[in-house]
Length: 265
Image 1 (cartoon, one colour):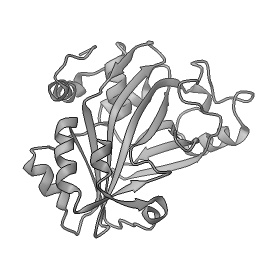
Image 2: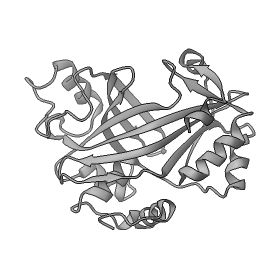
Image 3: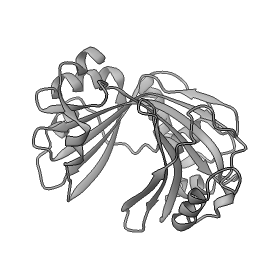
Image 4: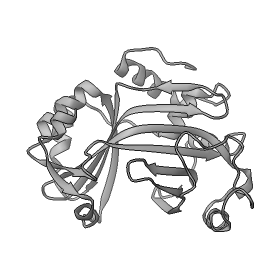
């Protein structure tokens, strides 16, 4: 994959910051890495790839929090709105990490608030970690108190993931794609791991008024839209206590894509 990405024209992170999608439509697609390679070969003359620190395949890590009885997950599983997610997102190559609260409101609009969280080291967060005085800075507690609709001290580490991300931008700068591969999970509550190597999650953020070159390519390759929350899918696959009924169709589709049986389905 690195050899194929090397054939793309680069776009810098600074240039990326100037891309404003004012009438944004977000759509996710899930496919195999083998089909992704076909898509990347088709798209290279119409898209540029984000390059940061000489890297085009960027490592990420994310730690998700929830209540011990998975209230945030359960709300999402039930399809209810509004809903929230709390996570620490780490840009591994740069060493930067951010504490984030994502809120999807009753109009299905997502708002993200974040602050820098330098204390996070991927793979090294203790399961006993809490957002209480003495464990984290007061500013982190205040941030969650302002934006989170759950008691700050009630949330605990639930699941951590790691993945590699590609970011593409079309020449007209009317759409942006993030493509995640090498997705792996570790569940703090159950101790279980899950490896989704072979799966590719594509998220298209585009200006709804404009023609999308990638949509035509996705249709040609028969890559169909599919919702995929990393937190929810990872929890469903690694926590036997989690409800999964509403996610079973998606989970079985993932099994077919990567051609192997997954646990807890």
